[in-house]
Length: 128
Image 1: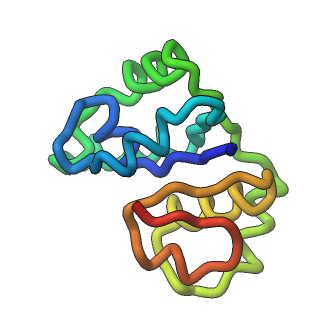
Image 2: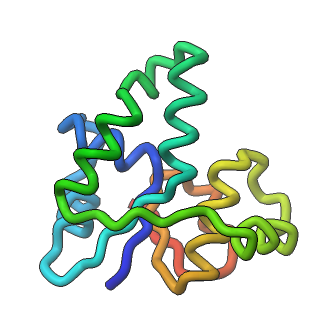
């Protein structure tokens, strides 16, 4: 399975936050799983951290280095991904979440998320 891990799950996994459920941890760490993170997640953390959001207190550069060191693949944002956002219904207004949905669809990845609103989109989206 190829997983695109959403931003909150990345933060929780990196910080051993108890909000990360055992089911989510097991899915992310299952043998044979290819784990991806989006460059958009790093950008989201940088922006929301600069706004002093407590749930985004992690250093985005350190998180990125840790993800790469732990076998995650970085997924760049491309024009194809950006254009695919135009085809998404407005189930969700957060541009970071919308680009993750588009990236997962374009790249044939399963988006692993804690945001139930994202499951309203077509494609392989798994709520944990």
